[in-house]
Image (cartoon, rainbow, N blue to C red):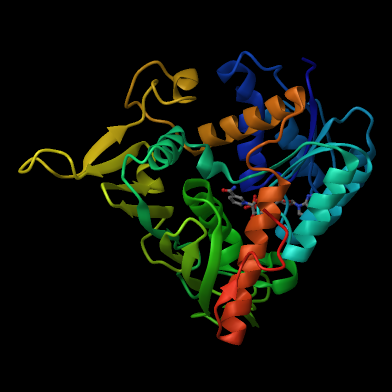
Length: 379
Ligand SMILES: NC(=O)c1ccc[n+]([C@@H]2O[C@H](COP(=O)([O-])OP(=O)(O)OC[C@H]3O[C@@H](n4cnc5c(N)ncnc54)[C@H](O)[C@@H]3O)[C@@H](O)[C@H]2O)c1
């Protein structure tokens, strides 16, 4: 296995998370070739240079186009605002680079399709940053559902709630603009929840969406002048899955008090499951065949018996964190490249999720149920 050379674009929240993962993955998973942190790119060259030194990159740049063309780069890693994903990913694909892109893959389903198909035509491996489904306990939940341990899973209630914009004076940013962020809460948060819902219960087939913008203006961070917010604070979705389950999703970026409230509750004929990302090392399980008088939710704590957990820690209940999920995500990509196998989640998943975001917006605009899979090729 050869050591892949990464060019990472963006040094913000996700840029740092990717850098931590790239540095750690060879230690956590010694069976893969540790990546080489070849170049760190940011439009702020001084920041790129400082962070490159601190994070262990060999060099830095402010020229992402050059990195996409650079023969010494094997993987282009995109951690920039949403509106830049398309042109960066298309340039990387055209140059034959493998691509690791943060979510959402594109601003719309059509844009995501274009990106996905460009990568496919180029024959490169791809990954999208849907890190939460890398949690070993979610793999347990998925297996339990598939094995019928909670019977027929007939209901999914998912939420993703955060309060990063709950203060009406939180400044305007690219996240509030249609042509830079795309949708609002749906792009930031909903994309994770949609991917998770389908990871657990299979394809969503029909939905009805409702979008609400509570704070329609926010102050410009430089001038303080109020600017119009162009996308939603809250999304609510009624839906059904192809497998027969019913479901709801509620996605909220102004949910006072919620920091990473990515939760689901799945009810089945023989039991149920509850998960909350704020307590990501716990999966709560209820089983109807427990003896009468002893029924109740029990908590499974993540431990070395749960897939990738053992690679981080030999002791149960000691806990993984969000950056560990990124390490697993990077391992998935490197393994996919080495073995020539599809990565989960890849650009197809990114495109699929974005078609569902589009369907939610369409439903809201037209006040109608939308059949997600009709005329929609992203699977
Ligand atoms: N997977 C997750 O859980 C998760 C969490 C947060 C953000 N994200 C996604 O990650 C992406 C980045 O979000 P963030 O929160 O890290 O943003 P951020 O604002 O913290 O960082 C963005 C970085 O991109 C740089 N940048 C902007 N334009 C550039 C250009 N033309 N060339 C080079 N660098 C440029 C900025 O200087 C900044 O360093 C977004 O798509 C977002 O949706 C994913």
